[in-house]
Image (cartoon, rainbow, N blue to C red; front, side, top):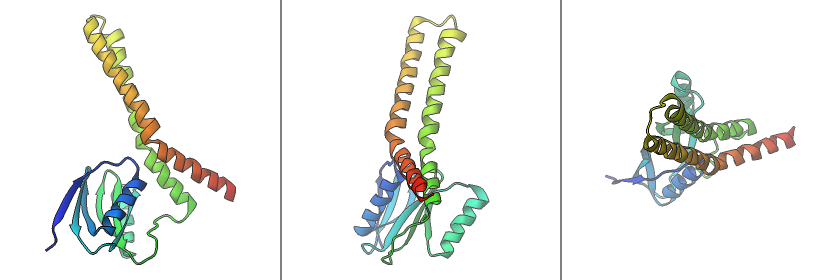
Length: 186
């Protein structure tokens, strides 16, 4: 009976996450589950599996059909979490490449960038609403309350800038690179 190991780790770039999963496979750890930053591995023969992460563009029935199609080609779905499918196939010496054409690689990069646009925008919106409420809507708010709201709004806006610039950067660069490649081919 193989022992399981759970590792807590956070990634903001799925290509780095894939590389780490493949590194773990080479160390003899096979991913068997993922839930919110918790990776569960079992001991296995080193290098048995290759891993890939698919950012699903469709949910529900279409997503399930796509994963079912992949299963028919020998690709196993280890876990699906937060619109990401953690996939593996036996390492047969060939590259595990889900997206060989330029357009589908570009679409994956765009899907990966969505959270790093949506989250900062929502944070800036929330900061604006907080400030608006404290300074315009609630005219009887104390200066202390307004100061606290202003500090919180500033932190939200600052965090949004960092998230966009730091966490979203790999995806924006990947999109730009693939778009340049597409323009060269056309």
